[in-house]
Amino acid sequence: MNALAALGPTMTPAPAWGTSLWIARNRPPPATAPFQGTLDTDIAIVGAGAAGTSLAFHLAAAGSEAVVLEASRQPFAATAASAGVIAPQLVRNTPASVIARLGAEGGERFLRLVAVAGQRLFDLATGEGIACDAQAHGFLNPVAGGEGEERLRSLIAEWAPFRQDLELADAARTRSLTGALGYSACLVDPTGGGVDPVAFVQGLAARTPSEKVAMFRDSPVVSLMRRGGGWEVRTAGGVVTARRVVLCAGGGNAGLHPALKKTLLPLAVYQVATARLPAAMRRGILPYGQALTDTSTDVFSIRFDGEGRLITALPASRDMSREELDRAINDRLIAVLLAYERTPLEFGWRGVAWLNPSLLPRLTAVEDGLIAIQACNGRGLALNTALGADLALWLHAPGAHQTALPLEPPRPIAGYAFARHMPGLMMTAAGIARGVVRFMAPQNSQRSP
Ligand SMILES: Cc1cc2nc3c(=O)[nH]c(=O)nc-3n(C[C@H](O)[C@H](O)[C@H](O)COP(=O)(O)OP(=O)(O)OC[C@H]3O[C@@H](n4cnc5c(N)ncnc54)[C@H](O)[C@@H]3O)c2cc1C
Image 1 (tube, rainbow, N blue to C red):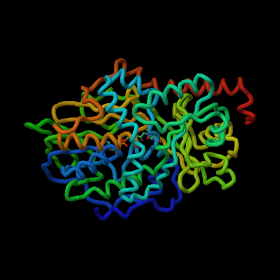
Image 2: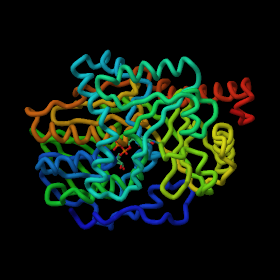
Image 3: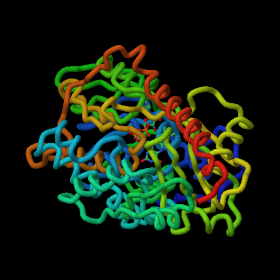
Image 4: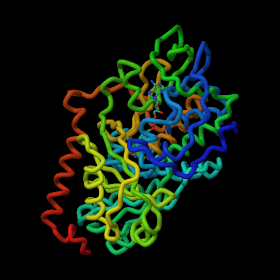
């Protein structure tokens, strides 16, 4: 364990609007000099969010050596922008659609990874003693109406060969678990929950032995070049030569190799945390501490941090002032949560979730010796941590391990100039539909059961 291992979340300091709650509450690692000079290594990792850090940690655990180059001081980009929900469920995909896409054998390999991804993240945090406000209380995916219930029933049946711990809660139990109006059922996944994602990733980095992995922060990679049988990875001050390179820079991957341009779609999201809720209000909302995400609308997601702030999100289809965001978020929470009363927002920040059109993660073999983890899709904390661990086993001993996802060639998205607006447009349409449904079903806006 290295000297940073003791770092964990601190009491949250006064917020700066625009800063993620997780960045505000975690002391950054001590400043180190950006990478300078030259270094030769077997494996270079670009980016130290959930994916890159897990890859580095698990490579070291397997006995491999690596160099990590990270652009900022703390894990940044999507990991720092996220809500910290641990949701070991796929978005808009089911086990059947995964098998249809990846084939029976490949699909099953990936589904086995997804099925344990939440549990593995919590086990890793506990096993390594990472203080990251881990709340392994479960994940709830609520639905409204008979069609939604049917969908959940068949989802549970499709998951049955891989896991038998998913349950369907009826309307009354859904109400008591969530405190939310308008839902008729929900999927209960006991392996989900919430974490402080920056504390988790910083904690994992701190526990990565420095004799195996050299980690350089404040060292953005500016170019990649093929050299002999390997790669030259350049920062402003130095060059790492590596036999193999793994790009874990999230949306930043696109700027590092021309074949990765136009392979991911952006979805901008506002993420907020309210001021701490009073205990009485808190008891009426997610009283058992689970995290909730409803993806059937323009994504309704709520969870509490360990200090009692309610964390939620709104798609950022346009710029919103703090006041506008406060109004929109509060109106939505009041409409859905029976016990909720208007509460000021304490933190608000904006992030970009990078989506594959299939909404499944991809492992991209860009060129010989150059791999990219292309896997945000709004559910990457548990999944990218698991994919990093899985890829580490393959990089360590390629003949002895098969990756959970196939290594596929880059796939630029056709009609990108238009397609890149699709996630935002779909969220806007879902938001309008939600407003219309509420208008036509006034019982929801009147907060009656
Ligand atoms: C607003 C928002 C909310 C989300 N909420 C959730 C949630 O609640 N639960 C969940 O599971 N998922 C959530 N996600 C998705 C999740 O955050 C991501 O899937 C996951 O964090 C991606 O991890 P990553 O390591 O692949 O990429 P990132 O976290 O994006 O990490 C990439 C890293 O690479 C670095 N980098 C970029 N370019 C370079 C470069 N040129 N050189 C060196 N380093 C570079 C960045 O600084 C960054 O640290 C959310 C995403 C967003 C945007």
